Length: 114
Image 1: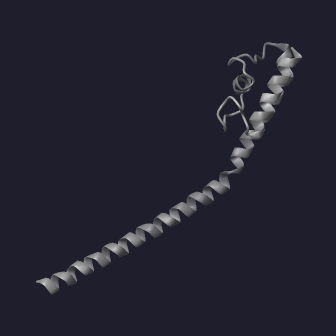
Image 2 (image 1 turned 90 degrees about the horizontal axis):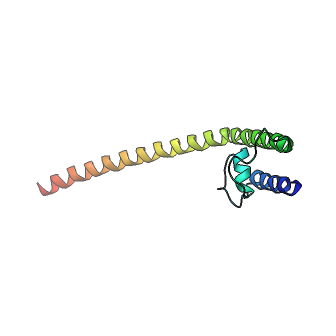
């Protein structure tokens, strides 16, 4: 059964590296995700099986690292949202200027035509 554990560990490593071959990229690391990535069925890694104790601990550790890395992107995400908000304000101001210029043009054209 050591061969199967090696396959699970390789699958876990692929998930950690962000290079899964079976499950979609960015999949949250869980027991089921590791089992599926290893080509096994969902639910194959069970706490009740003594052979999986070490593997389950490794999966939990990897899941925690993955969770922490997703929290680290918080400041970058906030900065990107701030930039998007700034560009939206600039765009709305430009639209307002264009609308004012268009109204002025229509008023002056009415004076020339009317």
